[in-house]
Image 1 (cartoon, one colour):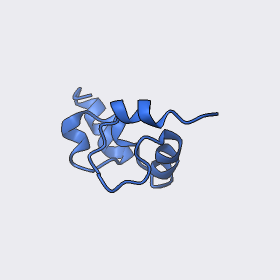
Image 2 (tube, helix red, strand yellow):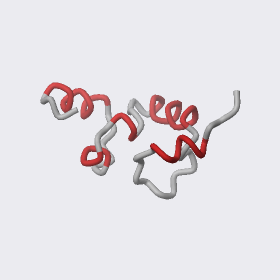
Image 3 (spheres, rainbow, N blue to C red):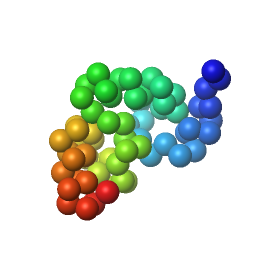
Image 4 (tube, rainbow, N blue to C red):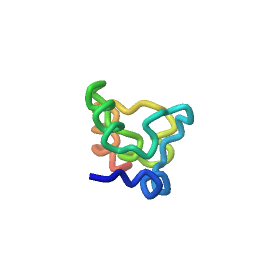
Length: 67
């Protein structure tokens, strides 16, 4: 399977600039799941900027209707 890095970058909202996985979704998802996190693209802009990508943070945002 060919990576669509350029297309992925166009919709990637990750603000962590030194990330080597930006646009390489399969690597990003694998990395974050190992850390018990979700990638930044699962969050809105405000929540992504907190860098709290934990499952718990995501669940609290869903429960409060923020995402």
